[in-house]
Length: 292
Image (cartoon, rainbow, N blue to C red; front, side, top):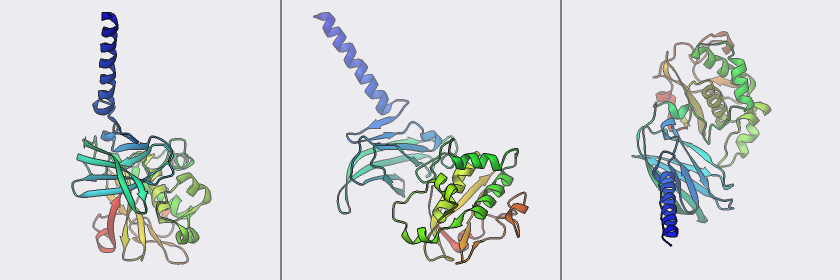
């Protein structure tokens, strides 16, 4: 009997230690009754969230820090979605919601985590829900092919930027019919050679991140356009953050918003992105709302 009690006690201790590790240990995997938050990569600038089983209900994830707030959809297939921790170091509050009816949602899990990034640029070097790619993606292979042998990050940015604006055409039909919650698929954009501004920005960010060049997908508004817009900001050691407020469609062709983003004429003629200052365009023509 004593032996049985001893085994039972050991089993209980082991179960407690496993539970403690999952919730508070190095892995930092927080399990709720219906969802799971994997915070084991916070230093690299992202978390992973999943619903524990498939459902037909709509799901949301809200991530808050100080006064910053980002709202995302969560897939209902029971698979992980990756979300960036782009608001810097500090305390993040993460909540998972399930739709009850109409626009009403119920909170299913709440976790607060302390984040200390290895680098403030880390969130913009990893894949996430909006800039979604893997090492085996065709878009990533294309980025490596285009920049093979290059060592200068500005040259890589120029080549990738030139490739995208030369080969990807604006999809006017998609722009008319795209629905809320749409997420770009970089390989589909590459294969079809067309997309909307969201697609352009996602593809460019994915290709540059795969080359270890920090790149933001930025959304907001432009005085040059009457609709919600997406563009990129890219970082190099030489320039700091460059605001590549990309191109706009004038009804006939894509045009650059700023001539300093690339060289005159054919953009590929430039070995570098020329004399870019962080003061231009962003403050004058653009109002950034979110960055991913």
